[in-house]
Length: 110
Image (cartoon, rainbow, N blue to C red; front, side):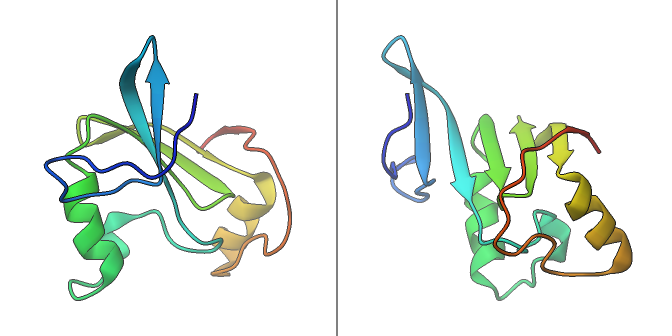
């Protein structure tokens, strides 16, 4: 059951959603704008995404998405990554905005 933005790690980070199972928070979801990179290595050191990632990466179970790509992080490692087929094509072609305004479900691991 998703919940509104939740404060974690003594208030230092607020993922967009927390997921509860049996009354316990079992994971978090962080939503990014369509076209935003999910690769933390691409975040400039002075950007909001970089500073936010420094805190988010400490969460033990995090789903990170921009609507066309999805990465499941567990203990600071990507364990599953999905992208919509058109998003993969756009990424290979160098487009920053893979599916602007489209609704496509993830289909397979990268």
